[in-house]
Length: 284
Image (cartoon, rainbow, N blue to C red):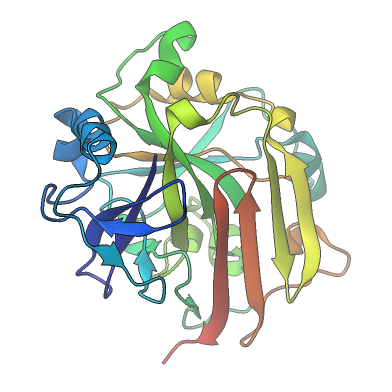
């Protein structure tokens, strides 16, 4: 299944995309795609509703805005430097174990919403990533069972302000957490539709020019390894998001760097999961 949320920002309703491409409103049956939905067997109930022909569900106009495909999660956990060539382009060494950081969930954004240049920003960067959503509470899980905890996958862009992240001291969070810095979507594809999460192409274009073009098989730490590792240090709740790192080609790694400017258009996509499209706009 493909789960969507549609409508005005902050007032999105849940829906689904059917195999024929039609978008159907599911709000008559389900309140939202949030922690309670995933924890209480919501995916199974949604699948039954779809199999029954979506009784009571109205078709959604394709022109209606899509929001992020799940409600704002309790945690947005990210992995840094998880692709070898990306780690090399940053020149900061190769990690011996996953590098974990957090993005503030107030950065949560829809798949076609603008990305806003924050005040004082001079080095805005992009990072296409495969993201996954946790389907049930995960703590100290075994790597061999890790994929059983995945509800689904989505495309994600980890926007970053490199001055805030790299040149101001402290940890990375402040360079990763500005409003609009965490777009995800356009939909959440349930895990049963992804045969192998380590065999997906992911890419990023800026103004139509390819900047990133990689494969999830190039991850140094796989989805299973990441889930098991992260669950050692925090309990992952249903609906939490884990972004798994980006391939090489980011603006900071270029010589000279090619950071984003107001007016640029950034497209990020993952094979089988759809694509995001963000216009870069100045802070107002």
